[in-house]
Amino acid sequence: MDKLLEKGFDVRVFDKVEPLQKNVDWFRGDLLNDGDVSDACEDIEVIFHLGAIADVNVALSNPEGCLMVNENGLIKLLNVTVKKKVEHVILASTIWVYGNAKGTVDEDCPIPMPDHIYTKTKIGQEHLLYCWHKLYGLPYTILRYGIPYGPRMRPNLAIATFVQKAMRREPIAIFGDGEQGRCFIYVEDLAEGNVAALKNEGKNEAFNLAGREFVTINQIVKSLEEIFGRIKTEYKPARPGDFRGTLVSIEKAKRILNWDPRTNFLDGLRKYIESSGGV
Image (cartoon, rainbow, N blue to C red; front, side, top):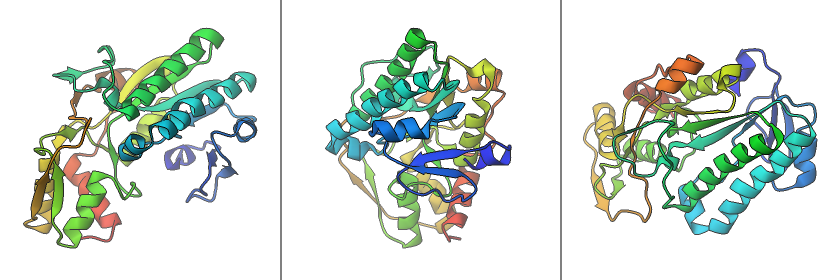
């Protein structure tokens, strides 16, 4: 949102919660309410669809709710976009769709059967967008996010939790062996990637928007130790269906969208800690 405003776009936010920015048109509503969705899409040219159950633990504890919001919510939106003649829908998907693929994955890799309800719904969202394009000609772009981190990140995400534990000198719990990891993407770099997806060259394509580094949970702790000193860790059993992570190619986004993340993991981590009142 910040990057869109910086570049002079008029922005409408459709959400139940009021946005932090006051210079946007806030439409308060529910994604599962047909009337709210229809009203919110009036006179809109491009939609960035980020509305979803994104917490994998919530998805696991309430799979029916996850399916309802992520897939049925998108169907409601897509029905309206056709009626309102929306010009472009950009979907926030995830690199989780690649599952536990080996080696480096790119956008041409086959999508395996999902092993988590959250992954199933994100694959379903991609399928729905593709179907609406084929059926109604709706232009789309799929953005497969790495794990975003940085200022204003959700407090229950691993990095945010670890930082708070480190600041309070409390032990950090690690599920499994700690060698699972992600290509974490700093939030400002991710926002720039979203803006880049507005280009005509990005229509009807999927792109990976991820960091250049594969960072394991153990490496996060080591990075925090560079900042806070020695940290106590507690290893616990792995969670069912947890995504081990894989190395993600971002060459397609570099080539077509002219996008390249600029923030390395340790610098982004320091920026986040500073924004949280840390050292």
